[in-house]
Image (cartoon, rainbow, N blue to C red; front, top):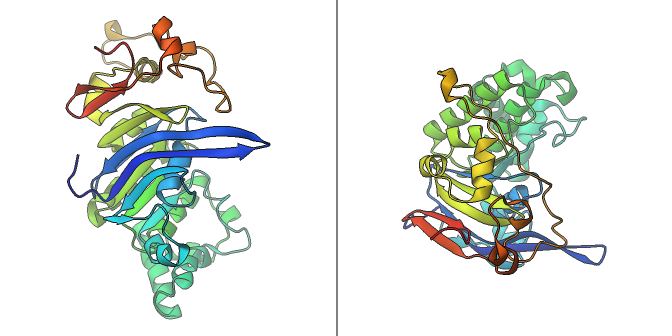
Length: 318
């Protein structure tokens, strides 16, 4: 782990009260991210990925745990002190059109955050909008358009430009390519890589597509029902998946081998993810795990080291 990480999350948990019931969204999650690196969060829908990303940005407040950004504890930081830090922490949404006002032009949408934070003059902000549009591969006249006049790929580039407008250090990418066509996904991924390289950006990349996460991430955490079940550098996780949930997720990736004899049958996870209102006893994955034993049903596993920087939470790991 880095000695001076840009982001440090320690034993963070989040619960919601919904109609008198308690929903367990994130449970006891810890990780660190070095500046300029990408930390991938993967798991099925409902695993707590987006909630965790919003906790890091303080868009949601944690019930327990500690969140440190650039050496500063922001867990309970008052809004007045948190406001300057918001410039350094931005988000790219899965659905960029839903995150934009239909009555606001693209140029106004990109300029909005700069105006809120009182950055520059009106003239300098408009110049910055042109620069950002060029940076994400769009012509400057796009600033006069409204969101409904652009394609999904163009809108996601606008979402990226808007996130860049305040010169952030950290960007949470919340499934930024899942709603795009495959060819457009590749373009956006390459753009994100180029921006990271040129601007030394740090990403939290949230996705359910492990192939995309493998390509982009330096380290990956696999979430299931709000808990990290496995965490490792990307290369190690894909070479040696140690938790049954990770193994099944990897087997569900469509791969076309060069040699037909090396084809592998695609599999899918049996059953559905349990309700976060009433998580299973013991290991939360045991109702769907093909290797579950009696101890899995009754005792909650603890994280064990598979390697120095690779750990998984499973009773089957020796």
